Length: 210
Image 1: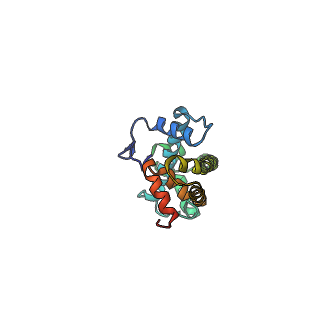
Image 2 (image 1 turned 135 degrees about the vertical axis):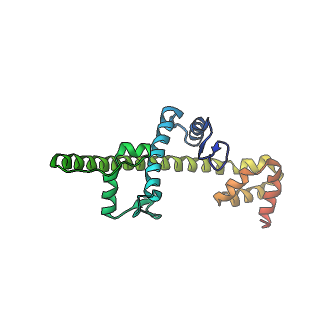
Image 3 (image 1 turned 60 degrees about the vertical axis):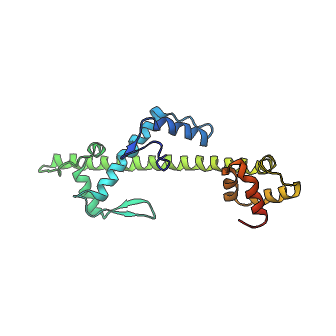
């Protein structure tokens, strides 16, 4: 959606993008019952929240010591850096962006409350990360399955499409169908062509011109 530019806006999306996402999911993943509101809207808010937290860790003026592991796709930090970050943030404040001042403690009861609070923050971040990871994995599996089914459907229709859009004799048609079906990239490109170009393209494929 961002690459197409239809709903792209400066730092955000134009109104209506949630409904467009709902329709796209329904098309790509038959049986998907996710709705623009509340499902997609809620998930976008969650993703924005966690993006703000990660962005603050990596670019914030007072967050030196954090790094990014491109292989594991995760924020990295030494234990002292992470503990210092927890001491200066509360999870609810992280959702809204601003940093909180460092927590000062001069009594045992305050230390206990601080320790409990830090543990709650760490546990909340851990649970949220695990939840998002599970949802992304589930969505990836469903999307991969839908893409695979769509590709299988196109492969089954290659010969029919060649018959409809070309004047090739039967044996040439079968040979072209076998060549196209052997490569998913060719299948996708063939179906992306306008009907009036398919005859010339298939003939060029048969003689090795492309």
